[in-house]
Amino acid sequence: MSSIVDNAARALTCAATSFFDLLYPPSCAACGAEGSWWCADCRLAVERITADPCPRCLIIDPSHDRTTCQGSLPFAGVVVTGFYHARPLRKVIGDLKFRGVTAVRGDLAIYLRDVLEQRSAALPWAHEPSLGIQPLPLAAARERDRGFNQSALIADLIAPTWHPNAHAEDSLARISSGTPQANIEDHSLRSANVTGDFVALKRTSHAVLLVDDVVTTGSTSADAARALLGAGATRVYLFALALGA
Image (cartoon, rainbow, N blue to C red; front, top):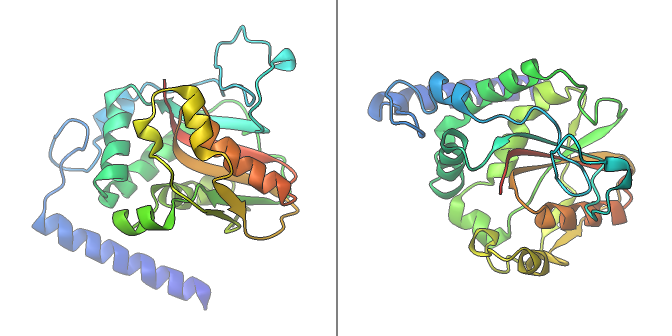
């Protein structure tokens, strides 16, 4: 029954998208070209990250010795697809995050499948027998303002292909919003802004893949990961669309 409901929901979504595309013809969020919400040229122009960042400090320099890294991030592995400073990816994330342009999800799914197909190394979580996919939660008031959680949308897109046997996780909540992280330039203040900001809603006994749109210092997602680890998660991995500066 659930598959019938899911198929019906997808059919309705496709029909609604086609209808609104007729009313408002799509144009690329990054370059403005007509025909799609994120054109193939801009998807190909993303400055992609081919080596996974260090899970302790997010450094991607191949000379970095991860075995002696003194970083404090609690991840078992980190995967990001591209750099946030590059316009093709930054513009799409900005439209998705701040303008609520969810119509880009179809083109974003194509991009994510392409990134996975081009990947040569195994995913850090590939060996996990049980994996929950947990979007980084927004504070309730912020999610009401936006009407959706962009991290949940990304999690939905990667679930079928990046770990087909994973299950949706809903064991984390954000208990306060503090100051928006995008407004804080000082790294130490970013960390202080999110300390204790997340709470686990239930016990967990498996690995969890935390999903976010942009990771910069890792302070926000690390706080969420510690809440999950404190609730029993065996390991926490991080997936983000972009790595900030």
